[in-house]
Image (tube, rainbow, N blue to C red):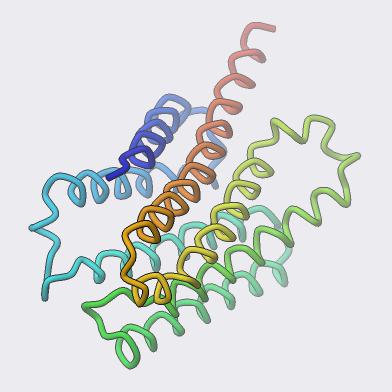
Length: 219
């Protein structure tokens, strides 16, 4: 087992708590989200038997996917004040939730991992983050310190996370069918890398908030 992803999740939570008072309001949604993620992963690692229903913890992953879609969707929507932009993001989130519910109740069942739903969620998140990044880069002259601009960092991490997760779950059923231990190791490593992307970029974004505020106080 690899527990590297839990280390990055915990570090993201610690940096979020440290910088919480200095975060913009749209970033504060990440504190309860990261608390949920850390508790869930800790339970999944050391007390998995409490999460097993019908010999599977797939229902937990399905729930986590819906929460991720809502949290990241709300965050991306908050980055633009335009009503039309927000409506499109919210519609994408609603479509993602609808696909998830259809997959859970009519395709894979509630108790098993809804890979179709997760693939759809990752496509939606990757598309939303890509559009935001494209818009920001197109107006890069308005952001002189783009590489330490927290929304840009989070959107970059989300794009990498979504694309990597898409690759993982798109090949998940095929990996299971092969029933080869090496495939499972590679699949798990890919999953770890996807978590590394999002939680590393989140942590850097929180650190940037704390550092920027600290520098302004010194000046």
